[in-house]
Length: 354
Image (cartoon, rainbow, N blue to C red; front, top):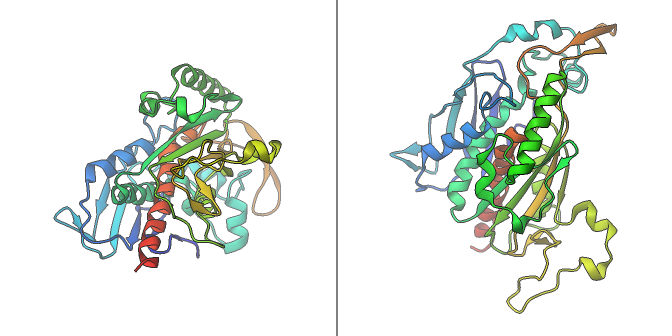
């Protein structure tokens, strides 16, 4: 299986399955001498882990990261950084009913067609549990980037959307509620809706918005390695993601050029930021912002018609512990992938100027 690595200079390779002994990763290219705050890395994992509120899966995983190499006396050595996260709360029997059955909108069928074998326990390698490894690497990337701020939050759940511009949001409120929305009234409405959906045995999707501040000018490598292209790839590699837009996105298609153009101030900043902090694939120093669309979780607690490995039509119902809405737990994953992209381009910029 190819495709387990991300990045060029700051590179992450992950391994492991949802119900294996452990998941883990190797971070290559992290500069030597970086002071590593292990508590901050663990805190990022805690934001992603299951069982943290009533509106997420109740799988109880401590998700404690153990570093195996590349960090000595609290500092990076410049060698590959290896780490593992033990899988402590496996209930593989919850998936025995789908051993030979393909769940609708899961990777079951495509994995079987491509490899001729699949780990049906929680989806194996296709499970979103793999994203815990990305969060570890992203948390380290954040420490490398120091002054750059990554603020991701839930912008919508189903039809309930946060209708405020980024400039009016208080990002300190993101972690004050279970849905991670920086607006109290909207957060309460979202949480109530997710609970209602769960009671119906159903699921719902939504969007995560991310705002990156204090990004230096000049990040991005045209023509094929544009900054927004790499951010798009990073976000679309996250489980359940169905769409990515930055800056004005699809809304920009409804505007005239005279309205959409970001006019310059004398200091090089722009009066508006419909470009989303990126022009010509290169950062311009303004805030970078983008939206990531997440589909409803595919496993629902309702009967559905599907097929088995023999091509027979069968009926199935989801079992086990699943999120009714993946969006709140996806927030730290979006931040982590954004941090990996920015860290990689920062190192590429240094290399190009030697």
